[in-house]
Picture 1 (tube, rainbow, N blue to C red):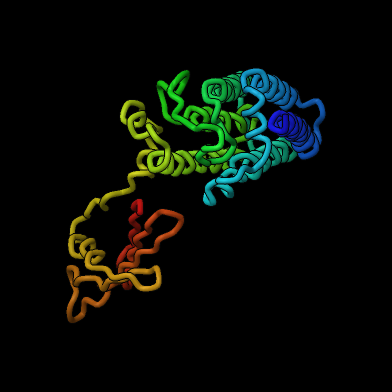
Picture 2: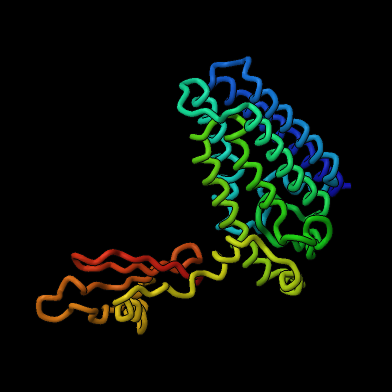
Length: 309
């Protein structure tokens, strides 16, 4: 009985969250634009309401309760990402789109282009809805749900791509600014898409390490190309003429307080009168990614290598 009461309470929280979500979108669009008769905003808001209702229909009550609040076991790195892709990024996108309508910074024309973008938004959102219907472990944050018998989901859209929910989210966020007639709002919308790609790569890494059966599933089904690139990392930097000695400077590093440094080997033009070619490689580990930075002397362009730790 207690479990049923907890699920019922979670479902109520889910409905409240989504009601506030829809109200927030409407308030942001109409207040920032100062235009109540904004037709595309009303169309977008109607689409969001339909999507929320569709999500409620396809999700079982336990999943709605799971998605109603932050759950124990959520990966620490996912908390800021989840807040950004679900709240901060979309809020900035809606607000900037409204301000764009008010001040006329940019315009998406003809109107049929906005309608096409709205159709892409609906399509992307329903891809996410399909993923929710096919995966009872479609949590709002990244965690291994041992308390719910977590196992690999391989039906529905998961037959074609490993993270269909994020794929749909990327489509929806990139289409939102255009549906609302704003090129400027593509800036925060694009940042949300980038955050989704990062989240895809890091979640994939966690599932490969911790979820039984996911490695075999990953061998059959591919993930987003950009997410694969981030997860694997840049294995090497493509050398340019004269860069061989500089790129070898990152070898033989030693760790010191989380930062490893190695002196650069002399490059072309070094020696007497060639001090401008000297520099230092610095490797910094940050949020699971190793950043190798080349800090050159005067007269040499900087270079950056990113590799997965």
